Length: 105
Image (cartoon, rainbow, N blue to C red; front, side, top):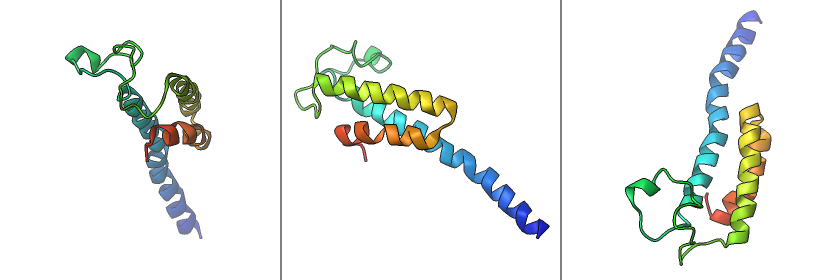
């Protein structure tokens, strides 16, 4: 019985970091999709720029409008705070709508 509990304990320890990183990966995917909505010309300095500063104009083929960008940013910031607290379940739930709007699967 003790051996079984030890195996379960180690399995939970090993599985936790992989599960915790999924929300951070989702945030990164939303950020990347959000950046791809802006600007026509990609310069080297725009790679590290904030999406709002990058030309400030949505691309012609953007899948979202300015109001949706604000909503996506709101939910993304909530998810970031929840991820920082370690609440991965709520973090992933906060990113459902932004991922759907940006078509991030």
